[in-house]
Length: 272
Image (cartoon, rainbow, N blue to C red; front, side, top):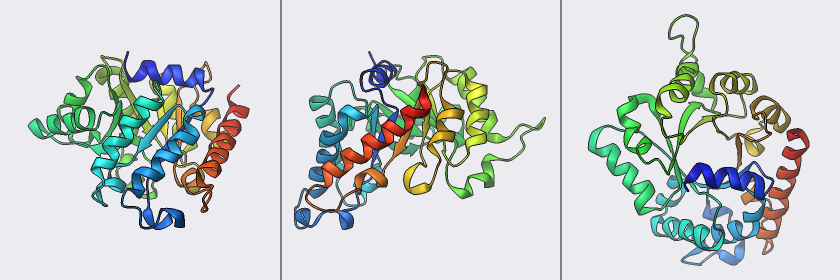
């Protein structure tokens, strides 16, 4: 059925807009995992198994695996999600963007090597740089629009004519021109609630991946109020460190579950 189908089903089945970011940092793992040659996989698998019924998606960050030579762990982790928790989509947070055959290889890497259901991409090089991803109609293409980092204003707020800012142009272009297969979404940071409302008004029902709650300080109420669609869905509200490292002992997975549940319940208070 594809990414969008699975995402919509997960919103309903788990009554959740929570996306758990899987950003493993071995130095922060519980002491029991120190010395485990497969600690990254073991840690992330435990988080996945503890939270899968509370989320709408998982989002492993590729650099957190690759920096430790753990690409195999990433591949096995995605396969585990699909096997143990079918219907919960996996977004590979890779922020790819390149031209020609390189873009095609990046699409093959994300979807065929790793088996991801969706991938984050950078639109800065233009449509041809993301076309190989767009062509995979069953896969999600989540395009950077208004990112949560302070430096995003350096480029994303530039006036591109008639008072329109670059991020607004990206949002409209994706919604009107790039979404022919209905497989596009946008990244809009929780740290910009006014811009989140602006993007929602420009793109209709297009899903929005919203990082920046939790450790980055984004306000949950503002995100839900400004970003939800008319049916109360339309968002993937991403939290990584606040869930992954909610506990530091042997019960770290239970602590992660409690944190994910608390975030889901907080979101749902404003969602109805």
